[in-house]
Figure 1: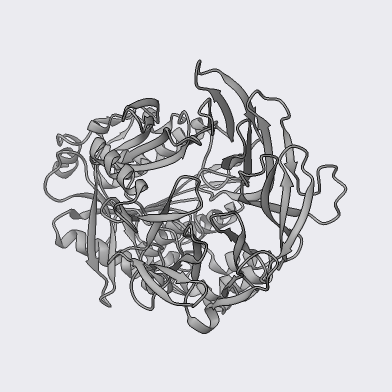
Figure 2: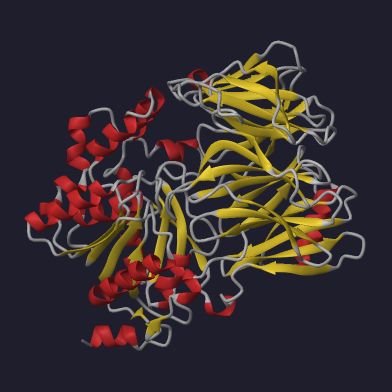
Length: 637
């Protein structure tokens, strides 16, 4: 009882956790200014969708809106002229779902007129037999009526991609070129000429092609099957001759390389010692790369030329907003006004209007201003080595003012391949820290951001080395006196739910409990269901999960329930298409069959993560109650 009271009444542990600040919907997600500076384009999250709103700067009046219906999100926003804005749409069937682009495009004038869908799956008149999708390549600022898109078929596993011009007012299409590789993305040079095509076939091996100009033949630049690396085109220097590529390395993180497209000569421009380029920084106009962000202990900016205009502007802003990450989201055509987004690991972020002539920064919107940074816990960067000496990195969030060993929640991320935890606010980590827990988020092997070798080390390691990394990190936290060895639980969503259940099956003496949210627990079921979608999806499952379906039972928590000796909490949504509810039902049944205490929450109207505030409140109330009973932290109000 002394342990429990010590946690509940420690100065950093709240007697009860107020969930309200973490459940309230944000006021906006992104903000971009129009070329003239007269309007803002905002993406506004609602409970079941995200919409676009156009706001007049002078009086803050909303003048136009675009909505694509329930479960839709605005994937990206482009000002294609002074008066017209185009958006791409994605679908998201749950708060934990990664949005997938539908390939549909909508547009509106700033006054709400000529608002319409400009690209639809079956054509604007619905007469197309074959469904298709579009992705915007370039807004073509020299032609205010047109945008450049890539278009591909949806009813075939290996669609050819065509380069098209699309009228942003009436949706008419003209074919400009066909890609030399399937599932292609295009990259333009500083003049808007399409010069690169990157894609892959059924084997999922990346292929990169280049051409000197429109109408000239494509030439193969990189074939992953031959080089064992992926090369991603980032854009061109203004000379049109120098191209920038993000290139995977045999060991360590990716590098940014300058390629002379005439001689083939390559020069390394940027490379961090630990992490990959996180996001490319571009000069005004959005086409020319000038630097990169790197995500590690914080978000850092590095430029090709520190004397460039963009570098000097970022350095000025960094001095004005110390301790914050900074992103210039957009600017006016004359360069006078910029939209600056700032945030860090305890601040959800603010949007400022920055005047480059007066150096004045005026606050436009604050994201989730009810979250006080002074009450939130910072994310500490941690580094350790796995049992095979692989370097591992992650983030530790501790209750403010805490001391000594704490009850620990190990929280593996979803995905898992290519996904990674970041230096930014994590709602669940903050919520758990307020309840008195230390929270460890580890970028185990298979995670992105640490180079090809680190990601490839996760291939076919579900339940194997990926799981061992979490075990090694838990032991590290104990050795470092961060964690009380008697009060540790595993909790995660999606793949994180799988890892939580596998963790207590493989290490039954290490953890006191496990919680899985919209998790996958039967790998043979997952492999079978996913492989039906397309041959390339089946190949992906073979490469990253395993090609022997009968052996997948050995690394499925549903088959290992007898090895679990601690209480379990499971939650799932009835509309989940990523991790169908059947996974949770099978896991519950297997646990009950061997007498393991298991609690469940099923919400038939929810998908891959709960959307509705009432359902999220119920879920997190149940989760905190479960953890409190087994680790001793605070419950929800």
